[in-house]
Length: 372
Image (cartoon, rainbow, N blue to C red; front, top):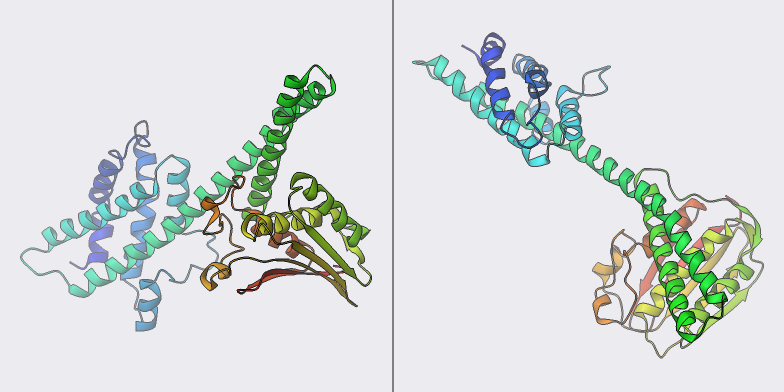
């Protein structure tokens, strides 16, 4: 008997073995009934049987082997994708999802080979069956991973949002205590709370911005007419107050007026300057320059210090990346999102950011159109 015919004729015995194995995947399957355990198994098997009965070119065979089989016209999701979605929502992990297919492959082939005795099973059916199961695994794992990523990002976004309210209460209370003039000990403690609260606020803001980009929403900007030179100068004054031992220089050439979100560009500049302070030569100045051109303004942040290796420079704007020597420096902890968020802010303004580094200096170059 050919494998496609066997799958359709012995569907119930195959599904019974699927259900029995799925029931062992604890704790997710502990309270699931038969229908939920079987889920889309029958539709997956029917799709496999249909594939086995369809002629296939060598090109189509190769596409399927790498998980790129064509989708059915008008179908938003395959049975394997829907199965993965429901398993993710049901609390299964990705290893359990893959184990279901591994068990299905073994049980179908074993039952079919027993049925074929004493004749030998058709070898082409075995090859085609394995290809179809691999395709289903690829579809399931891709959908499962996307669902888990989205759920995690939504959770982190809600967590960051809900933490803002108690944090603001702490900061407000600390500011009130600092203003009471209740003695040096109280003032010092209040100042420590204010600094720690500001640091937590910055981390939360980074996390929320990161989640917006991962959810496809991008960095939120509210562009208005403004002078970037003044906004840059104001931000540098704030950084100087936090790092009075570091020398920060600013050069402005040309007209720097345009339409952009000043607060976001100050955030971008702050991230670049703090990065230069962390990883640059502590005895050398950090140099910031603004150059107004016809259609855009170019912002550069330069620092002296060890050159960044090419391999590190290629991924320096990736999220959750930090300098290779960050543990050797007496710097504040971070999420490794500063340069990533700087790039996303530049993109949100229709611009871009690049970096170069050699033995003389490391330079970050931001190009910002005057109008989006």
